[in-house]
Amino acid sequence: MRVAVTRGLFFLALWLALMPSVKPEDLAVGLVATILATWTSLRLLPESAGQIRFGALLAYLPHFLGHSIMAGLDIARRAFDPRLPLQPGFVTYATRLPPGRARNEFASITSLMPGAVPAGDEADAIVYHCLDSRQPVVEQTAVEERALARVLIAGERLA
Image 1 (cartoon, rainbow, N blue to C red):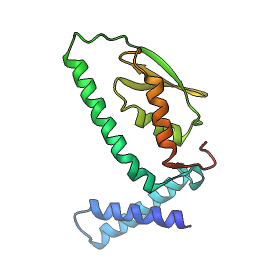
Image 2: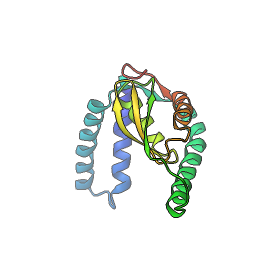
Image 3: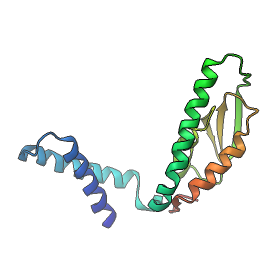
């Protein structure tokens, strides 16, 4: 019940932030939207799917932002310097994360690694397309997985 109330309050606050007025009819629509959004949220992402350690997430944020900036700069450098040797290809990273929320979050975060983007999913691995497959993509990905593991609290569907 606590999870439903927390999510409901979040969705209601979001509705109020997006609405230019607080007319009674707007609030009525907002309450219906809040109830539907909360119900959908609980169905698609039940509490058993795991949680996030917010303190660890705040500590992870500088790491995430730094890697995002470095990835952007690396791609720009590669795009504007045709002399850079590239060897496009695919690299498979064996992850300990089962298919589901944690693996999807992990794949989203690792898509910000310089020159690599998740391109496929296997039972125990994620396939990355790399601009230069000679780069240490597997090692970098392992570092990211360890960092993200400190942020997530395992649920029934997380490892």
